[in-house]
Length: 168
Image 1 (tube, rainbow, N blue to C red):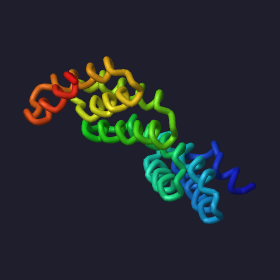
Image 2 (cartoon, helix red, strand yellow; image 1 turned 90 degrees about the vertical axis):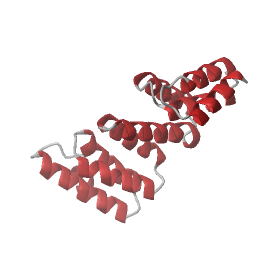
Image 3 (cartoon, rainbow, N blue to C red; image 1 turned 135 degrees about the horizontal axis):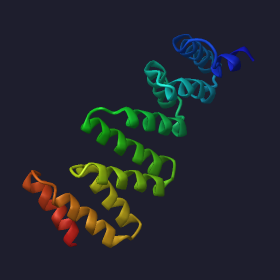
């Protein structure tokens, strides 16, 4: 009961509340309840506590809490400052959604949003094309490959591979 109160605490200063939740998460993890540990950490992370976000990611990965890891990656994606970090996180979250959690539609939607937001994201376009082909959406796959091939500044071997895939 004390752990639950600590994990859901809403009173007090933010740093004190976050520290209390992190302590509750450690206790939950120690007794083998990774799901509650991550939930407590995510509550603080959603309020902007970076140490809780990092700890939530560690616990989620260590204990195969894949749904929670998806939430962690979504929060990290929101706060990603560099273009490359955003690309990497988007691909990782899409693979988690589509391959591990079985939500291909959400994964494709995420990648489509990323491809629109970042016109130079080759990885998102290739991942989309592969999933489109798996889903027998050949026109969409060809368009994704064509879009990849049109990214300016790509090395010829990469652009050529995308162009060949679009043509086949």
